[in-house]
Length: 307
Length: 284
Image 1 (cartoon, rainbow over the protein chains, first blue to last red):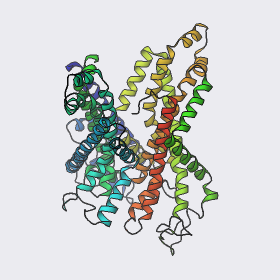
Image 2 (spheres, helix red, strand yellow; image 1 turned 90 degrees about the vertical axis):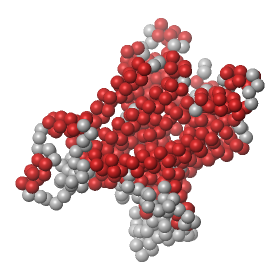
Image 3 (cartoon, helix red, strand yellow; image 1 turned 30 degrees about the horizontal axis):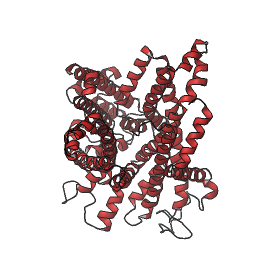
Image 4 (cartoon, each protein chain N blue to C red; image 1 turned 180 degrees about the vertical axis):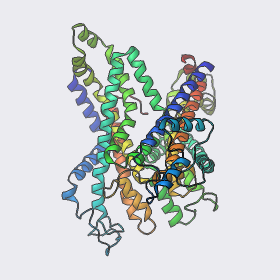
């Protein structure tokens, strides 16, 4: 067991290094230097600028220096905001994005698994059809459409909730969290319904029923653990989606999180910021994939023995 | 499974019996028709600006209203359908070509080749592709062909896994062994025995990939990193709609509705196709 986990970690580390190197060289391949967009500067100034940002060294030396700093958690300076380091910007934006993603996933887990489990238990009744139809809508309705529609209805039409900002007005966290969580609630509902249906048809559930356990105990004590495995294995990959979703939600609701910083950096071609955040996000995603793999291993005895 | 024609006609009958899938299919056909013939159907030019007119609510003259530059929204949605559907089909095609060849080779040759190829897929699965696509768009410019290639390069992984699994099952069937014993070459084997038998799952997965690809394109366009003006996709229309939704809500609602209905239709059609071709393939 421990061996399997260590093996997974051993694979993850080189993957992160490869991603970091690939990103570094990709960004360096970008046409034009980072200061080309500005008005023409005297050659001497350009030279000094390049020297300050270590751009005059040979590429391989730049790479060595960058990777060396990276391992120490230093992502270098931002090209667009002089005097601010990328690390500093990541740690300003990260807590906000984390909080947003946390609320979203809590909302998604509660609503999604309640709806999914109910639908599976009450299969082929209205309690199955209605939540599953809503889930289908939730999957087809992209975040960048749902968000503005919620703003239009609750913010502009009903005027009951603030439509932008984070932590400045009462209730301004509700719409962004719901927007980000909705699609996941829908996925989780479908996954937990599927998982529960499969688990409920297993022999050990029949045994539990046969020994006279009340239905709610069968579900809570026996079925849930197996039925929710698909949900847990979905949570790792979901982190990648949550990050993508945070780009959209933070842009729509003007939230000063890492997602919006990233989109702005992509727009302004702030290359060091893009480089740093890309590596940071990648590491985060790989880490959470690893975490959910391990959680699935722990939850499923069969996978445990196979591994 | 013995005869090709009966498998497909059975599937066809099942598909016709599934009302949701049928409705999805019809909506799709109509959309494709509208997109192809957009220049003849569109009542107005999609690019003609009439600044004096400005944003008008829907009327007889402008079915879905006009945008802030006085352009007819209905015509713009029609032309947007061309871009959005094109991205959906072309990028899925790219994914299909890579994924199917990868899966067939891995599954058919098995052993070492298989384990190396599938390990590569496993590693790629863990990579943050959305971020990589954004990175590529930033570095190499926002080019529609690059967008096709980048999205296609992301979506082939699942296809490769599905195809490999299918090939593994088929390759151990007696008729394949018999063909091999008779000295059929690898190429003939792919063409005659393996490919026809994995066509079903490929068709199903391709149909379900198209909406995902369209979502990805719209997501990028919404952030301003996808399709660039003067071209517009449904994603860019939604983006403009959001900018002016406070006064002119129809600019958000109609493109959004079109997009959602299309995704709905594609998903229902894909689900129906799956049930029709092979009731055993699981839903997720």
